[in-house]
Length: 185
Image (cartoon, rainbow, N blue to C red; front, side, top):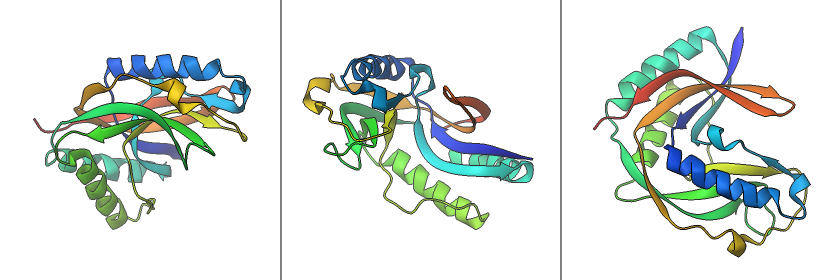
């Protein structure tokens, strides 16, 4: 049996509330029917999408995360704007951009995870990682007036990483926490 899994940095309630306000604004745009909106209570920062894992791989990843989070500290980020991948002219993923405030603590943890996942033969994405909170996915071409989605910058702390299971439904993804790992103080 396999489980569809990912590793996420958990965001606090104020980030979920900010995401909810922007998601509400996105729902009101004329082409909103071409957006698949994320439920505000489900937002997070994806560190690695893992795909389908066996029970043995899940156990191995839990052990790896337990050891790794002991060596990476809590960190502050700032949600500073709404943007899109691959760019704002042709948005496919609309997100809250998150910038680390001091050192690249979360980026360092993400790179350590990448190395550790490779060592246990779990495929990882090679493209550059940027901390962000996904708000919506475009299902077709659309135009979004990004300046109208201006937000007040929000400082927040990431203090926990979770191994998550993702169950896909017709109404969207449902996430279940498999295990939580606090970052060092």
